[in-house]
Image (cartoon, rainbow, N blue to C red; front, side, top):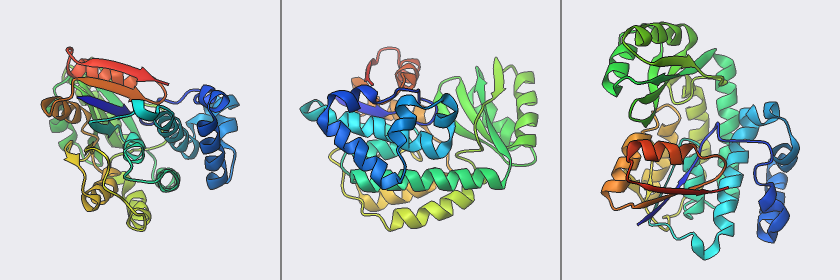
Length: 292
């Protein structure tokens, strides 16, 4: 069985999607439609902008979404998933590629999500840190024992967790995690504490947009971040999308569940190869590939 997976924030690079735009009429029309919907030429920033341009959340998230979704569309009959999943932002790409969201609605939600997260980041200084080579349970235990907001935000693969929260709490956690034997506990260059209670203002704002959006049953099960389980019911999909902003991304559990349910091949659609690497670390026997 074939699983298509879609990357999240951090996978962007200057020039992403340009080949699609230049060589495929359908892709070009979709990119131009996106420029119209967003009210600015995101294609200029994607193809010829700077790393700094692409790092802005309001640009990064729609850019990665567009690259992934348009790529899926241009595959035509090659895109026949038995199941799909996306990492954080990538969940919106997965849902759109699988027909649960229209292209226009998916892009509008991603743009709204990006703006809401940007605002939440500006309201409270916060950050994230990558933790390597400690068991999940130990990371959770240390985070739970610290005053202030610090939680596990991304379960990326065994031995790789990202924590998220208030800057002071993250600093304390990093000290204790290193003392407990972590190989690294390194703060990331991100705008704020994604997938933590610090994103509550963004969650409340995005909930209204999601509720007002029509969600259809997808063409295959979508494994969602909040519970790592397959979903096809539009009501459940909506609730999980709202919860996602303040809940952890359970990527390790998602991939394990997909494999348990019969996935034998994982294809990453979108910029970078991050998810291919994570899938291989979760299961060395998995077959992985990607298209950009």
